[in-house]
Image (cartoon, rainbow, N blue to C red):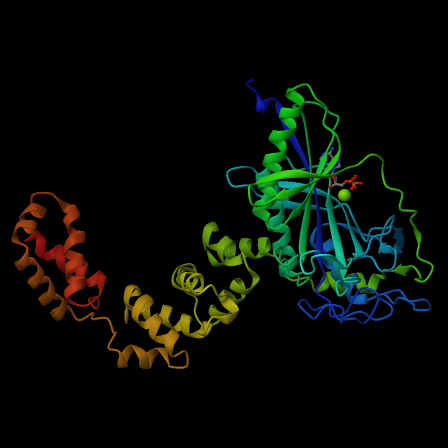
Length: 484
Ligand code: ADP
Ligand code: MG
């Protein structure tokens, strides 16, 4: 059977849970830190012992509002938490506290850019606060499931889009942008592998031009942005094939199998669950006051997109460099610190994109652990600009010397390692003469019109001068000598 997949439109809505970077849980003083011994962060409040009372963590509210403002949402002023009642072993209280009818952020959008396509705003439905559940661990004991309640009660925001995405690439771009925002705002560390950012993908297909949504499936257990894209693409194809073979899609929850890039059924939803929501009687409603909102608005940091635009408009960098520098907040910070000491913006960008990034990749390290101070990178760039050292020597010999000895001064290293570039025409002239005498045939060919040979002569001068001949002067002398 040949299927025309192009007849169909893909519709996706994403639900992202982001663990908030607070010290303590949403309703108790228990620590939220990752990796502690099991069941060590579990006060009676977390376990909901009789007589305990929850107390709301205000920092979690600020974090949620920050993200809401950064995503153009409306902020709800009068909020309450509802009990979502269900029984599950990882839920010690028998209910989860969640903002059922009053999500703290409503509407909003996130601007995304798929390479080669027009930028688009992805519409959000809401962002609400809720608490996490504990963790069931099935692979420690053969006959039992173990439960760790450390995570129970950790604050989350759930960011829910409208069914407004239409391809795996869009989902990929959206999640990348969302994670950048969470990280720039210090709201969540965005680490999908450790589970501090989790995504469920709701996918359906319909004939192009149709106005009604198709039946959706929800895919869980997606532990990387790349896998979200893969899962969506797999599901889209599978759903179209079901329809094309004359069958009906049934609403399901599925799980992604990262080993082979496919999905499998977890459960089939028959009816909507009845969670018997009601406002938690132990918590009073909370009101977001004007002062708090203004305070947060005033202190919102510059986000990556704004920063990238500023680098293009004010520093004259190209879009590629600007995006690369702002991908991670910490890289952007290193750049900002470096340009305190030089206005060679492009030079610094080249150093970060080139030698520094390759070093970090090689070491599997991050810029926070990079040993050389931004000021020293700025100094190197200045020395290159002044012609005292050339880029190729600086990015190899000087760079590795500094990595070994981050406290040495750039100037001392250049002179002790004898790396200074030779701009003295008379010695360069000698090197040029030497090369041209060694290659008489090539000189003839050049003079007959094979001008590309200039690169060979340049390379030879570089070799015999051990990289120290100033390339600009070398080039001038070569051109002059080759003319005669
Ligand atoms: P549920 O109650 O099953 O969680 P919601 O209506 O709360 O469903 O929606 C959850 C997510 O699924 C939202 O991101 C929403 O945009 C998306 N969604 C809803 N219906 C569809 C559909 N038919 N196709 C794709 N996504 C959908
Ligand atoms: Mg859902």
